Image 1 (tube, rainbow, N blue to C red):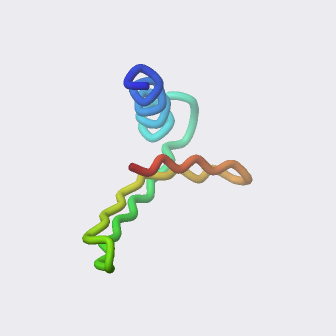
Image 2: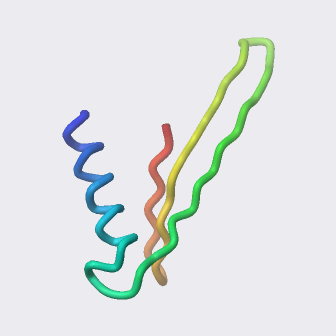
Amino acid sequence: MIRSVAVLVLIGTLSACGVDGEPVRPSVGASVAIGSGGVNSNIGVGLNQGPFSIFLGL
């Protein structure tokens, strides 16, 4: 699991820095929800390039 996340981070970093073409600006999202089950938090990072989109949420 950790290796697959590391590979995804590496791919996202390389595509964001422009190694394979024009740089792509990543998008970041975060949320916090309070409910009867307690406090839940979510964070995610995404990349969009034309018709392709990748989003990794934790």
